[in-house]
Image (cartoon, rainbow, N blue to C red):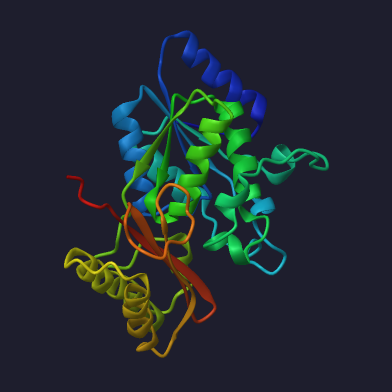
Length: 284
């Protein structure tokens, strides 16, 4: 397995693979890899001849008051995991390599990024789309793998690929959870043991909402209230948002008639965690 930090070398390596007829899978990450990332890499290894894992903490998707500088990083540990899982290349560029001069061109998916996480993180999804577009143009994978935990990101990337005619298949991958039920995230490293225990209220609240939906509840207000009351029972938890949106448009719904995404963002101390589930309506 190679680790490459410059665009030209990464591009040449992949081009040579393509000349030999190999299929290419890409797993875009910001590093500090956990079992959730590992599941993406494992799936990519099964489905492609060669797998590239990009590791890049993307500065343009962080607001000035966010955690770019303290975002956890451990390239050696990440490298060991990627090698163990069978990846063929780590592409780990610096910010100067990806953005050597002022950025005049950005990619945005308009209204899909206006609510949920995008409502309070202005410019976040433009930064995501811009860096993902750059990675797609550098690596030119056949398939790219994204986790369902970042459900809004997944929907936005899929729409971007469709609108801009990228010849890439986006492969959604299920949320991987710790044995406790907590959705795996690099930001879990910020949590103390006490905070980790408090954070379990997030998945517990979503599980209660899912049960209610399965029993036939269609009132959006009641579903939100179930989640809200459960989370508020935990003193260390502070709700950022609770949203129920159409799975395709990501627009808020007033009645549950089509497939939906139920998504939450919750602060545990100063750490902002997200979680979600998809509920699909039964078709006759």
